[in-house]
Image (cartoon, rainbow, N blue to C red; front, side):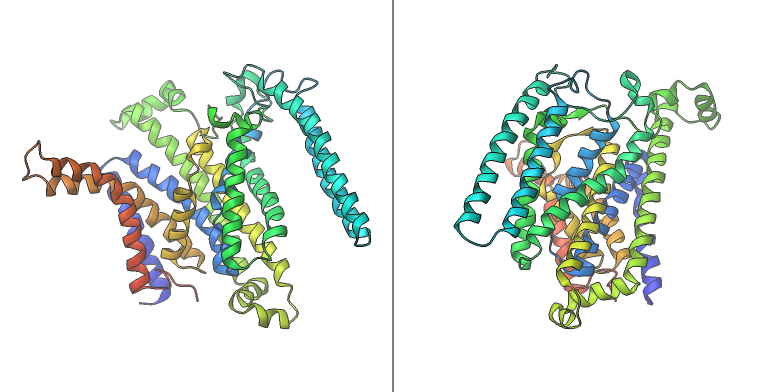
Length: 445
């Protein structure tokens, strides 16, 4: 089978799985799998840019995804009443500028002064003094913002101009998607400048640790996005189901086809989400393919395969690694903003390493590292099994334990263990693919 025929066949299998879910279970379930599959495919593309193009082992995926979700809150939500009064959010911004200026001044002094005791003392004095001033400004602003109606807000809010009618400005959420990419790219630049000189295993440890720092900040800094109290009710770029159900024209069209307006409204909303996510995925995929087949892409693969030879040819390996690290992280940030939009809320505690690091890496490895279409395929397949394995595992356990009596301890144990079928299945899929197709289902050339 040729490469193109294999690709078509694999994506046809994915389509059959999703359509089969709609026929055998419900179209709502099938479309939810499709939407999360589209988002997972975008995440997998971001990781594939870093690993498949340049061989960068980034296990801090969840940090960049979380920054994308944070961008949705900071852009699409309205400003919290009173938070921007004197002494509040403006004071926090001034403190952050002060902190950045302190770091910049310290770097400049360290570069310009002659190495010695004087440089060390001046550097230390700038850092300590700047930190003290920063905390004096910052702590007061945080206390002011977090004291404003903490049960309902207690944070700075976002840029939505709608006020109480902020949900009418759902298009602001679409603006948050590229902003999420920019926020993740900025964090990736900072991380890359400090960590990309490390060996691959140390880079993995560093990115994982920095991702945990990002999550810790999101969970503990209530002024930013309410911390673990979560932000709910994010505006949506698609209609609300209740609005469709109250629309006489929509209800009339659905009833003319013999459908239920409640079910039809949910399906309609999911289809609109699927269209938006598919547009983003296709756009990123086209750009990734153009980059892969360009001279820049060939250079990145040469660096991936042999850094020493690439350096001997005059290529700045560290600078190119920084470029691809920023690009891949930006794509993950866009995916994080899309996912928060779909959820309609920001819940920092849901950003778990298993979901946003292990799963995405399995998607890339199973789909085919170095192949953009393989990363997309892996995103759909792995997410489908991640969702469907638990109910199928429960059904399997019920069939296996059917001969046992209802009070059997073994039967109860096996049925309760069905939830662990997810982890078992992910590991089994990974092992089978590595055994029979070590380069993935759609290997990169």
